[in-house]
Amino acid sequence: MSKIKKYAKKLVHGPLSYILNPAFFLLSNFEYRYFDFKWKSLGFRKPEQDEVEFVQKNVTVIFKSFERQKMAKRLYRNIQSYYPGVCVIIADDSSKPLDLKDDSLQVIQLPFNSGLSFGLNRALEKVETPYVMRMDDDELLTVKTCLGAQVKFLKMHPEVDLVGFCTLTAIRCKNPDEEVSKFTSFSMKGAPKPLRIPHMTYTVNH
Image 1 (cartoon, rainbow, N blue to C red):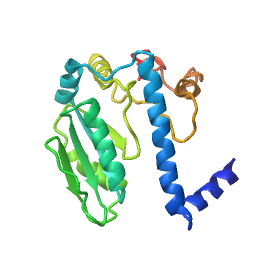
Image 2: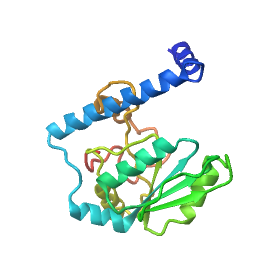
Image 3: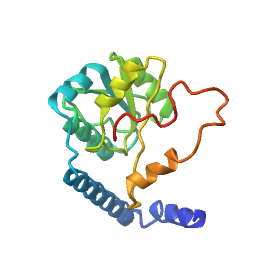
Image 4: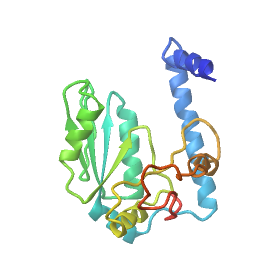
């Protein structure tokens, strides 16, 4: 499998990149839409207005962008389609400034190729809400994303500093619920210290 991945990377970054990269984008977009349609048919919906307003007051989304304007714009539009008005901070260190403006957006233009950690730290300095969600520019929210539930969990458990999401990596065409089971199946009995919150405490599907 590792040899196959190495070969695939050579193709993607080689002379055929101008064909393979758009093909990958189209295929991954199709996969996203497929799961979105599937989950909606099962009853999952975008957040109600009360959750949107709750997230607006409590959460700032930050992510780093480098030479991928199309993906940065796609993620920003995606976030606003689920949680309109939520504050988003993008740390961008591309050679060409990120061409994206909006009332809910703050773009921090950094020196070229400043690095991931430097960019995220600069974005964190600008956060004014109690909570922050850190994303990558090649990720997207779905109808199974429940930011409001995550924030409520953190408010109920101040001893917890961090909650996370399980992601579906395109393009794999695998059932996300089966992928999540890889993280939920192992035991934490061997942890050096007792867990304050039991492993895989149920909150909500996301």
